[in-house]
Length: 193
Image 1 (cartoon, rainbow, N blue to C red):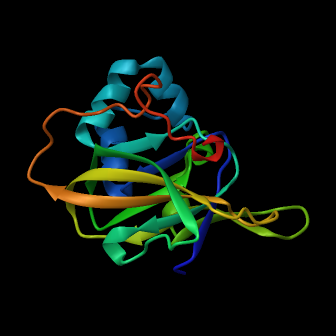
Image 2 (cartoon, helix red, strand yellow):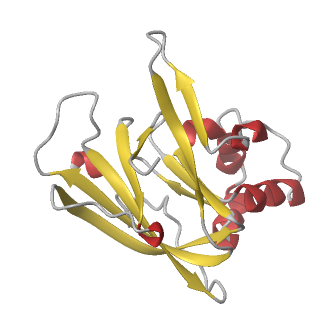
């Protein structure tokens, strides 16, 4: 599946490596299924998760469909898309793979969501919507570059008119961190650009 469309609910997406994220939760004795609530209530724990590269939240963004591309596996947006944003140097630790998904999946977290190569749900009309995808990447510490794209000629619904492209640059260590939730510094809402 190289042409991946992500259906986003609750105004954000996440990047995480399953093993790294689960280890972080275990080591910090997080048992709640509502991971987002835990990080909201325990800001220091949230900052530590960003510092260690346990996950990378990207929000707020509109709850719509997004095309997802990863340059490390030779996926890039073509000339039909316009680059609207670029931010880089966000920490992420990866062991074997990275998941990119709708942040809504962390409202009632269940590690069984990682059993397949994707996370999906079906509408009442029987349409399958994908809310997460797994990408196989090499293990290591990475600085993530996030680029936001918009179609030059918008298409009718249900087509995705916006997208995110990620580049993972391997590093030896994390030297500090950037908090993507600092709204005064970062705007990832490509659908409003």
